[in-house]
Length: 224
Image (cartoon, rainbow, N blue to C red; front, top):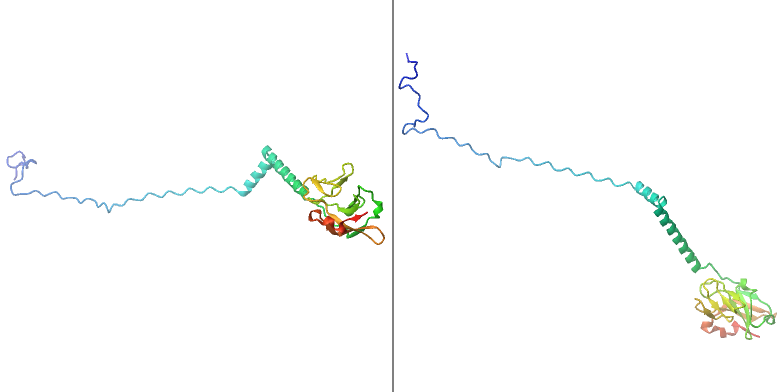
């Protein structure tokens, strides 16, 4: 039967500081393998979601805004008025430069007897038929009433003794020679002759131009 007293010599437990007996080795510590860094996977961060694109403005709203700005604001009204005025002025200028004048006279007209014309005078009786009958310096000739600039019809000014175009200011002497304004050349002459009955016949199917030396043609005048 063992003695329950723990203080009996020879029965005390070995002290932790007691060295093991010679030749006896303690169990070596077991090395714990390090974690494989390749085996450790990192979770990728979530990709950022793209921002929703802004919706384009509706075309209908843009048009309404433009019309409102042009029609219901002072600046828009001013610009609209100025644009319309410039457009009308441009159309008026173009219309003024190109008058709607067409000279389509009949082929032949009788204008009376040579002795019925006074020297130095222009007879406007046949102006509506596109001819002035002139007796000047002993000859009778028929001038075309069409201005050589852009086709307007000049007026005979008796006091000033000249033809004056109301469209662009061209001026012509009683002879038909141009001397002022933009007209580039003299008035044209129609062919004239004396018919079987003694009356002067103006033939508008033929014309004569002074700059070409055609006024010397006997068909362009009648000697009296």
